[in-house]
Amino acid sequence: MSPALLVPLALLFGILVGAGFVMIVVASARQGRHAASVVNSVVPDGVDQVLDVLESVGVVVDASNTVIKASPGALALGLVSHQSLSNAEIVRMVDEVRRSGETQTRELEVPRGPFSQAHSSLRVRVARLGTRYVLVLAQDLTDAIRLEEVRRDFVANISHELKTPIGAVTVLADAIEAARDDPEQVSRFARRLGKESERLARITREIIDLSRLQAGEALAERVLIEVDHIVAVAIDQNQVAAESRGIRLISRGDAGAEVYGDEPALVMAVQNLISNAIQHSPDQSHVGIGVSLREDAVEIAVTDQGVGIPEEERERVFERFYRVDPARSRNTGGTGLGLSIVKHVAQNHGGEVKVWSQLGRGSTFTMRLPRAEAAPEIEIGERTA
Image 1 (tube, rainbow, N blue to C red):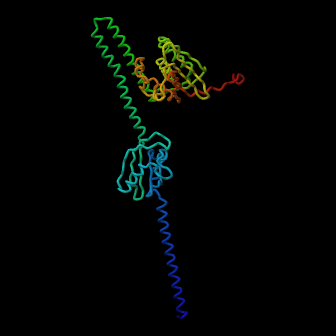
Image 2: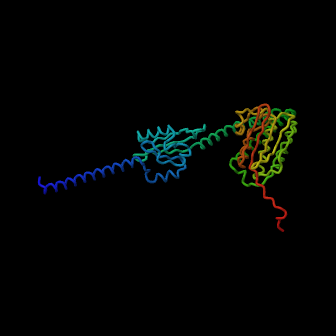
Image 3: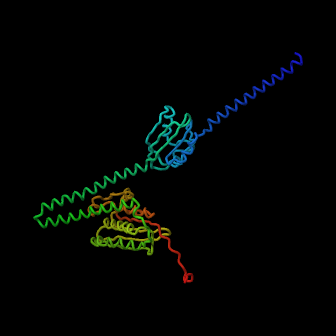
């Protein structure tokens, strides 16, 4: 082959090789970008902003069930862990939606955390989001279900509690009518009618008080209150009931404690604690009322000498209408609302109420309230004219 022909052929071969190499590089780059787009999933426009403002749970997962976006609610409920859905039932719902393409809706009980015994009630809805993603939305129904249970229990309890005195009033009224020619019988039935009427009035009054406390109306205005005054008034209100059974009310503790709050509500709470202690103490015993000052709190403790409360019952004594000994409570006029009122008064004042009890030795109920900060003392030399 002549040298003149060899040069153009070599040049053509070089051009072909170079073009092929460029085509290979371009194809590889395209494949790389495609692979990167698959691995580095991007949420469709607008979904990020929607999930960020959702109060409910929102999660977006890709084809491998990797979480690529989650709302704060999903993280708070513990539904997302290490970029994966932590609940197996929700994962199964996602898989079903991916296979069938149909939206799934279920109500699930989900643990609140890895160490918690409590559960959250969720209404979970899972749907496709485009062709590659699946969207998980969940509404937390826990509070709504709990409130409905409380409402249902309250209605059932109040119906039961009111049925007894109302029925007794009706029977006693008929008995008085039948015994109208016997003054002694009429007098006896009238006394019993008065007791049942008083019990009915007490239940109604305490239901109203409890409703006000739960609605937050009781703390419309907070004022500085002396704890000694609260205790003194509460003791005075229970003095007659205590003396009728030979029970001494003994008040001791630190003086000068002050709190901010609603005086009638606090008096009602302490009065209920003392009344409860009297009801559960034997005759000729004593009830102790103590006030203790802590660095940032004031504790009002009421101690009785009753039979005590079993351990499994202690947390339930603050429930509405709950009685450790129903027969004894009804005989002593108890409504089962007193300790529930105490709990709500303490909570409305930023405090709490606790119970200590030992069978055969009695119980101590302690209401702990935030202590009012003392005003700074002014030296005589600092006083202005």
